[in-house]
Image (cartoon, rainbow, N blue to C red; front, side, top):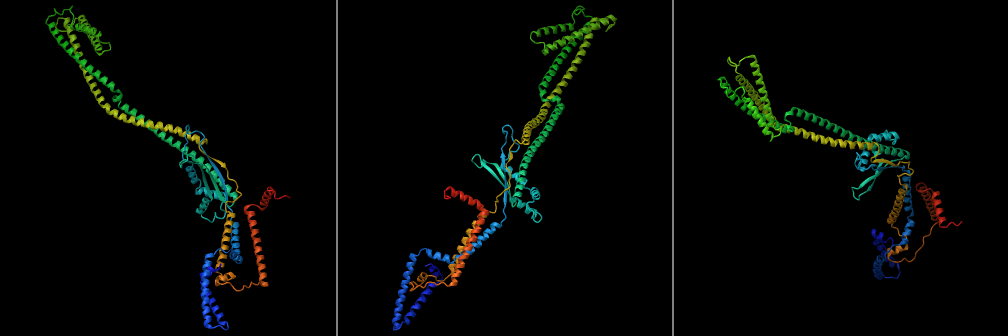
Length: 601
């Protein structure tokens, strides 16, 4: 039954049926006393019966076909060598590969990322980048070509390849043997909350001591580079802010000098003096008005004196004799009365009161000068006009000359006041333009001063941050676990290699045995023949082994036993060297058996 699918697949069933028919025909022909025609009919009937039985048997076989365990066991027994040889070869090859591969050791150091010790509300760190980013940046700075070559030469990492391999290959091998893994923690439950709390730096090498030395060197480089980078960044920030602050300080000083020079250049037209200029303009205009009034008064007095002089010269002095009061005296009296009247309504600081006092003082001074001149002329007996001395005429003339002088002075003062008014008006007109230029300078000064104050504050904060970094109080890297000399290699995983090799050996042995059995077309059992002929055999003769075959069978058993012993020894060696020593396993087994009380002795 086991060979039926193979025979059907090779087309041998039909050939065997034809052979069966030919054998039956020959058997009928050789029987004596049997007619050939009768035998032919019987043969055809037998053939029909045989064909029908064969068809029924085939249908029955197809319906009742199942897995034949006996056939599988017999096939496994026959093809044991075809399974054993590839199994042993592949298993030995895998063991050889596992044993011959050089072990690779890895030494790892763990660096803790410690947060800032002083709260950020008091002092802000100069370096605020994420720890993952800083680790990546430091990794790029540490694992440069120059640093890696120095490590290779310092610890003789590649003794045979340093002189033969190119530098790029050596650097690439170093990169492949260095491992940096970041240990993160999710603080807020989202992707942005992932923070680095530590990272590991490892190095792989066939020599565990070299692996440890290189790992220690890399850890030292990482720690030093972190301190140097943070301190340099803080110092660079402080220097930059100090430089910018100095630039703004110079700019502020320059703007102050420009403002002072601009004000000095336009000191008469400064905006803050605008009210003062208006007051000066008002006073000047008031002076002009006052001098204009004085001039009119003096002109009237001059005309009156001319009339008096004419009358005095004509001898008409009865109205203004020696004992009579002159016009100058009358003016003084009138002004004093006006001053007295105004004192009840105005204050002493009022411009009108000041003008009246000034006018009275001037007239009194004029009166004193006239009296002095008249007395002097009288004492010297020098008549001023005519041969006959007339003191009244003398006084009038003196008064006229005084009035003319006062008019000239008043006009001069009016001219001066008008000139001053013109100058003040020009200054007032110029003030808006000066104010515009001054506002531009003040605006520039205010902006520069504001920027200077902001930068000065930032510079102070940067200096604090620099002090924080220099005193190692900011976020820092701390060596949590230094690299140690590894005792167990990370590669190769010999147990895994041998396990995979054993599985492959079993699969290969079963596959080869199955293939050989599949290609073998021989009939070995009566059941196979019965399946083929669709008739049970008449008699079955057992196989008789010869003495040589018995000897071969013994040698075969000895060979199998030897192979089993070799496999057991190899397995014991592999367990001893790759898993655990056998004495330790024996001790553990002894302890386990003693615990369950199986060893009563």
